[in-house]
Image 1 (cartoon, rainbow, N blue to C red):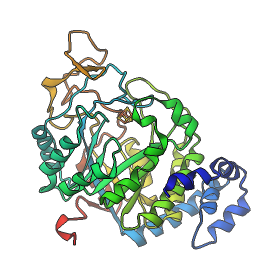
Image 2 (cartoon, rainbow, N blue to C red):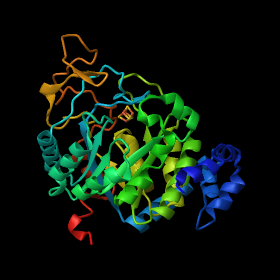
Image 3 (cartoon, rainbow, N blue to C red):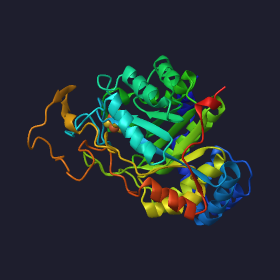
Length: 400
Ligand code: SF4
């Protein structure tokens, strides 16, 4: 039994319609309750609940303070490689995009990580496209092992694996795994994933459970908002989170709230979620799940992030680069294109992604970030808002 069987029984489309049809009386009734169900969540993300945003914001803020205190955990993504065998229409790293690619050596990963440590970070998220030739399991294990001693928390966002393949990564020192389902709409998923192993929807959906079985103690999930109706995605993700809380209860769960950003390939969002609806979603998630971490990335602007923090956000990235080598320029001399798994040397004018002299590296990023503040500026802003930025909240020495 996995979440796939529960998900197959979830009347998600009917619930999304129910949300659209919710009236203000039903929202009031839900807001009067102390413990909420998925049906209540459906009401809280309804258009009618938009009128109660202030009320929801106050409740969400109070719950977050009660459960987490006035702290926000900061982390940084470190991109290891932008090689990928999948075609995901919304992603700059898609196999068929003629981008500039590179996979960092373990030493280069160390250098990138050292630059992030110098900025204050102690939580790191290692990100890579899915390409067994360039991003092998052994390579990932070596990267983790190289960082483990100096980094209290090393999480991964890489191609899904079997439980047995995850175990050596946990043993090497990784404690967290993030996997976005991208969209919970099977039809949209099939349309957007045109090549590669990622086409297998169920395999991806079961990934957090395999990761948990292998020993990961932090799990992160999310849809990518902008692919299917946001209310459908949100209630599906809420059902997923609910399942994980019941079945993977030793793990700390986070839910992200990521929206599509411009990237190579120039994919345009298929659906919209407004800033106000994003705020409503964060409040609804917090009210349904008082103890779940809510992640807000640099995909959102500085102004919007400042406004969303008090609503229930517990974790933020800052100063992010989405290209391998983005923090130090590492790997610049190895840039190439990849055609059918083969490395193709760059020749003059071979790519529209021409080198940019003012960037630390010329590898192509996964997407453009919106909040370009430095980690220090984000930390200062958090303090101004009355929050303590937390760079480290766990140490492996605490593991029994
Ligand atoms: S979303 Fe992930 S799997 Fe898809 S192309 Fe991008 S890096 Fe590859």
